[in-house]
Image (cartoon, rainbow, N blue to C red; front, side, top):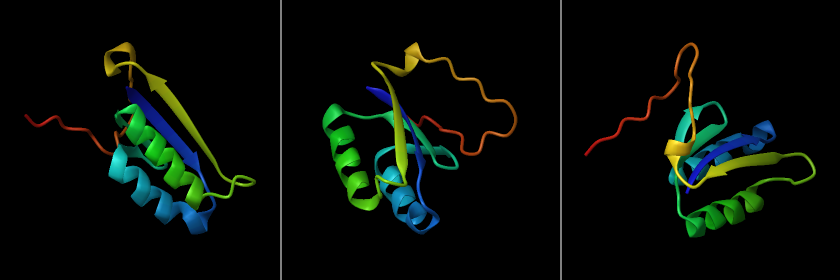
Length: 87
């Protein structure tokens, strides 16, 4: 599956959430990640995120699709972190 993950967490938890998300997905912009991930790995990511976040203050939004090809992505302005595909 292909996901886009967006988080909004308190400043004191941003560093931990950033490190966690970078282990599973590609960073593309402040608090925004994308990439292919298995359902099991996504469940692991969500479980670990719950350990970091305060559900009464923080939030995570996950958009998912079966495949990246079903998403149209348009970047206007500077792309913060281009994702290169190395074979």
